[in-house]
Length: 251
Image 1 (cartoon, rainbow, N blue to C red):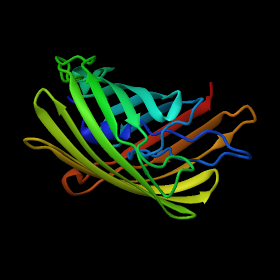
Image 2: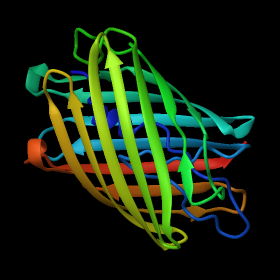
Image 3: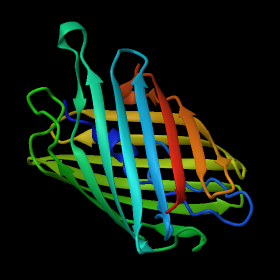
Image 4: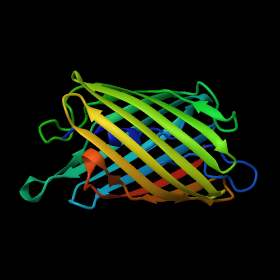
């Protein structure tokens, strides 16, 4: 079972800004939407995310680590997925295909204006077992175009357009979110993501959630988050729980 683009988009890079004077605000720890802010120089981020279906025992866990390449303009990262699906004797658990990501801060960034744009190119490595349904068995490529726009002092919007191709099979995805900056360390957000695979297979998910930050004097920022994906349209009836945890610190 190949990981749908809707989840690949969710667990791809979403960098957080570096610590500022005073308690650093939450910058960009979205869940299903990639925000267009690269890591600032000297700051590394470790992201864990778990999506658990409430209709079955299926779940997907991902770990992403992001590093700036000398300056904020260039960012490298990787995403390692672990999946579980099936039932009874047919249950499968294992590592999926790993994504190696490069992102370029083409416009904006943390403190760089009202509009940010950071296109990403990813190489998907066939580390998962194709025979068990954990991987595609072939090298893939993925492109995502995230844009972030400050609408007002307390509201930010983000949009994504993505494409993925593996072994000649293409998938397409679109997504958008609005984040209410309720407080410097508390955000409420709602996201919507659509994905379609060539030759069939479509998903549409709305994801309301909340995230908050714990800041430490040594520059460490910990951001937990929780959301509840709701399938609509072609995904009607799907329900899930999404848990998020980010550690960001100087290096």
